Image (cartoon, rainbow, N blue to C red; front, side):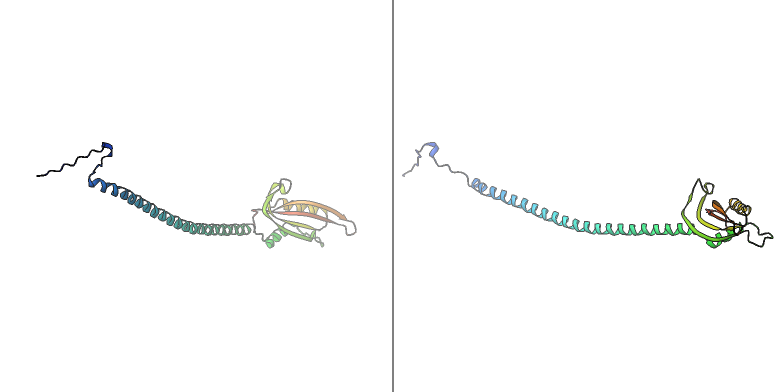
Length: 207
């Protein structure tokens, strides 16, 4: 029987090395697995990025709607404040409203008694009225009392005593204060012309 013997006489570093087949399979599959893993990671990142972008868009839409709601709320608050201001002004006007008919009536009650004189002791040639809003107090006028209206009166008076009585009556009244302006004598008619300002006291009692 003939037996063949194969002897490799090449140097060791030139000899062909036969590796197991499963290592070749691993060498092929490992890079492929790495590529698939990287692809899966990239896909996951891409999907997450899309989801975040969608969420950002949704948040921007919600923010825009919220801004519109905030602007509307601010507008309504401004309207509400304006309405409250108007109500406050209305209440102030009502509280400071002057009944001029009552004021004139009360003023006439302070006139001195006519007595037996045929000529009026005092008359009004001019009477101008104006409200004082807000009510104010002046330490140099009306003895520092607060007034809400002023009545400018001028006319003629029979004598200085009648004028003094009129002023005294105004000063002692709970409704009025008085600021005397001037008096002059008309020699032709033997009467006196006078001018004074009557202040209506805020909170003064009215009948």
